[in-house]
Structures are given as C-alpha cells and as structure tokens.
Length: 418
Ligand SMILES: Cc1cc2nc3c(=O)[nH]c(=O)nc-3n(C[C@H](O)[C@H](O)[C@H](O)COP(=O)(O)OP(=O)(O)OC[C@H]3O[C@@H](n4cnc5c(N)ncnc54)[C@H](O)[C@@H]3O)c2cc1C
Figure 1 (cartoon, protein in one colour):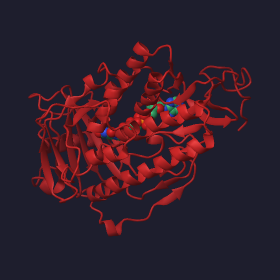
Figure 2 (cartoon, helix red, strand yellow):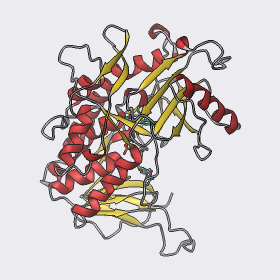
Figure 3 (cartoon, rainbow, N blue to C red):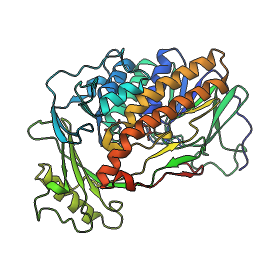
Figure 4 (tube, rainbow, N blue to C red):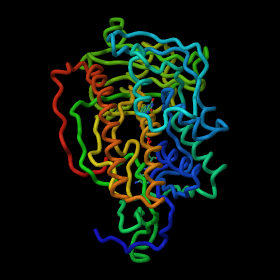
C-alpha cells in the first residue's frame, strides 16, 4: 500500500483511535492532566449499544476518579443480589448486597490485583466484597463523551464518523491514517488524510499495531436480547444451567450444555443464553424463539418485544503479543478479547490499561525514551493478561463443559486485525 506523506499537524497532542470505554477513559484522564487529545471514532456521535455491564467495584472506583462530580457513577444501578460461582469452593452460590455502592476515586488505579480480587472468588481471603452494580454500555459511553464535551472541550477533540485504516510512527510522531471521506473523488488531494500527534493510543478494540496474537481454541457462543424494565424493580442477576432446566421447557437437542443469565438494570433486562453454534445465522426467527424460551428459565414470562433484535456474541480468548511499540500503545480490547461472563473486559481497560497508558504518555511527553517506556507498558499488559487468563479460562472451560485436562493449546496467529 502506498502511504501518504506525513501530515503537517504534528503537536504534543495524543491521537486516540476509538471512543469506546477505553478510548474515552484515556482522553478524560489525559485531560485531567492538561494533555490534549484527538479521538477518532468510526461510528456516529451517539453510542447505540444496549447490553448491560456488570460493574465490579474497582471499575466503579475508576469511574469515580474520572469525574469527581459523579457524571459517570450516577449511571450505576446497584445490584441487589447476584448468582455467582465461588471459584475457591467450586460451589454455585448467591451473594446479597445490602451495603451502599462505595466507589472510591483513590483506589484501584493501574491495580490489576484489585481487579482480580473483586472479580474472583468472594470466598478468597482479602477479596473485595463491595457491592456490584450494572450500567448500560451505550449509556456509559454517551456519558463519557458528554463529559468530554461539557468539561474538556478545549482539550478533547472528538471526531465522529472518522474511520482509521492504519497507524504508523516516526521520529517524534505517531499518526492515524483515515479512510478517504465518502464521496471524495479517487485520488483527490493525493491520498487519504491523516491525524498526527506525539503519541497514539489504539483503543479501537482491534489490533492496529499488527502484532501476532495468542489464541485459545475454545469458542463460546451466545444469543442475547433486551426486555423491558423489571416490573418489580428487582435488579439481581440470575443464572441457570441446563442441568437445572425443568424437562420439556427448553428443547436442548444438540445443545445439552447451556447457561442462561439475566442481568437487569432499572430500565431494561438483558438475557444471554449459551448456544452451540453462532447465533442468528440464517434463522433469526428460531433465535428469537430460543431466547424467549430460555428467558422463562430466569423468570421472564413475557414474549420478546417485536423490536428487540437478537444479539449474537462469540467469545474466543486471545491476547495481543506485543501491545506497544514506541509511540503507539494499545489498550482494552485491542490487547485482549474479554469473556463477558467474568465482567472483566471494560474493567481491565479502565483499571489497568488506560491509567498505565496515561502514565506512559506523560513520561514520553516529559522527555523519557519511548522505546523504554513502551517496553515497560507492554510488559505490564502481558502480566495483566496472564492474571486475567488465570481467572477467565477456567471459567470459559467450565461454562463449555470442557475438562481442564482436555483443553487444547493456544496457537499464534499472524497480524490480522480482529
Ligand atoms: C455482551 C457483552 C457483555 C459484556 N459485559 C461486560 C461486563 O459486564 N463488564 C465488563 O467490564 N466488560 C464487559 N464486556 C467487555 C467490554 O464490552 C469490552 O471489554 C469493552 O467494551 C472494551 O472497550 P474498548 O474501548 O477497548 O473497545 P470497544 O468497546 O470495542 O470500543 C472501540 C471503539 O472504537 C471504535 N473503532 C473501532 N475500529 C475503529 C477504527 N478503525 N477507526 C475508528 N474507530 C474505531 C468502535 O466504533 C468503538 O466505539 C462485555 C462484552 C460483551 C460483548
């Protein structure tokens, strides 16, 4: 591919690709430190994602730190109760929360141990047993974007409908190359546009650095759908496995192993159910029927609303082997694929990656050697990924009914972006 000449808008600005949770957290924390950024988002201004996140306490700590006035934490809906696996005893149990949410802006920054302590077994000595909450992912993204606009419009330049095709760097700069604007004459201006800064953060959820990845063989398929608000205002989670299924309620032929989970907030309930092949495919009507039938298992008796599309999710664990290279640092889903059942994806991005990336950026802007700083950042991310895998992979295997001894080895795959 013919690269365009370097653009002339270099500065001490940081270029951030993606206005998801990781990109926005990076931009907000940099702004708190007076560092300007340009955030390039390929989609439109309003985030549309409906699913709910379970917010573990360290994730809430970081949301509190990103805005002292509570612009982010006000969206958290306290959980009443949750069904959970105790990974120490192996027993399935229930946790009831009766304490208030207690996000603490002074805790958890860059602290992977804090995340693992909260997301792991509540029975472990020293576990963080503070109350969990839920938040709509789209609501959180929109709140972060709104905060950037309201408080930091001088420091955060948010550009929507701006897809980045690739990234590159040179002496003193890093750059995102943009897709040509829709309707532009071929070759107009010579080449695609570019945005240049002193550092670049890949928060696209892809792998723009083009590193090899380590991929684990198990695939976990899910179908989800959004129901209306809980009629009784109850915001507990509920989880059932096929083993608990009353005979005849759900057709389980060809899909003997499945879990169904209900995650409610005050304005919606999301049901996720495990399926044996990628959901929806050719038969959306069958997928709707299956989700509606499985929803009964977790106490939802009404039909799936007509306008509720079935959301297909396939999870396959992977980690990015080299998450940083000099002036380009990757964060969030760009450095690992999350298993959403452990509620650690966005949490790891906000608790671990983005504060450490902010520290790396400020070190380089302060004159530190980018090669040394990025090597340290990459080592921290690899260590964080090891901790997350130790927590997550046994859970994936358990949910799929695979014995640990039978789990296949990971493979290394080349640089294709996810
Ligand atoms: C069903 C489901 C439930 C989940 N539940 C939880 C949970 O309970 N708790 C939790 O902590 N995590 C959860 N996760 C994980 C969480 O969604 C991710 O870890 C988190 O969204 C990662 O944030 P990110 O900003 O790195 O990436 P993303 O959320 O993927 O954001 C990337 C952004 O970059 C933009 N973008 C992508 N490519 C480009 C490009 N080329 N140019 C410009 N912009 C681009 C995208 O449009 C997007 O806005 C869940 C995930 C799923 C799928």
